[in-house]
Length: 447
Image (cartoon, rainbow, N blue to C red):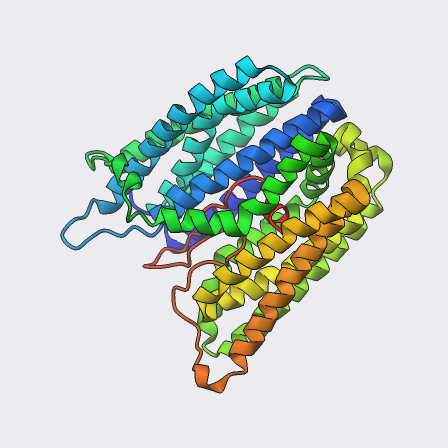
């Protein structure tokens, strides 16, 4: 069996893979915006947000449980068997759900239903390829995930760019999904090399004691609420609202990459500090730096000439540009909130779930209330208010824990992930590669 890469190589490959994955998601939305009119992009954005929710649910149920696997004493193939089982389960489950759903939606008629049907058809390809990324992370071979993701990027951009101007959302979604075939084929081939003879047990993901059930609940509490509210806006109120919000958050792709790095590498770095108050100060400083970078990036975007903006987002630029102050403020608030949750997860992991539960509902209420009061711009400011409230509550909770001498707090080794929308376990057992991020969209969609 081929050797595992050296720790430094694995670290570089993990960071590069996160960058490629985030870059792919940004590029997909930009190219789709340029090849379609504002109405088609609004539908594409709505359906792509549905995919984001399904992807996050799959990562929570399958991927997060998978990266916790370890070889049992005397059984050297436990991890390999788990990786094969995860990929097979994802392929079977998404096919079983996607095929009949596509038939029903196609028969229903309408542009949005046709776009959702197209997503259902290509869902097994996209989600299975994503599961292979977590399998390679578990096998401590992030360079294979990087290879597959680079091929995915190389295939999806031409596939979308070759579509005719004014292409409809269903056509764009089919092109996007089918372009995953080369990357999936290479990933399966590489995975087979490292798991040959290990066997598989996909039924393990249906057992009552499967850890993914808990992770799926945490995802639903902390991540899906705001995205489902955005989808609701598109289905019930105005699909153009989804296109505008999606276009604005797409412009903050570089910040998403930084957030992914913070949630992936933050816990092990804070664990090395040793003193809980120093760890909190370090997290606060990181949050301040990220917030400052969000403000600087917002300034750059606001100064961007109209021609360049239209070159990036096409007809969607006009509606997205109006949201930049609100979206930039949201990202600054999220930077501080993410690092607050990171501090709590390192010091007292159980404290994050109640905060996620309460303030995810608050964020949804702010989103819907803002839209009722001020339309799309009000919705964007509502997301900002929700993010600021969650961040403030998280820092207040951290301050209470640090201010109680009897707590006897100390950083917990292997404390896992920041309970934001990207869940990545800490480095363990010599594994230096952070697991891949949760998929498209980035933190901006979870408030």
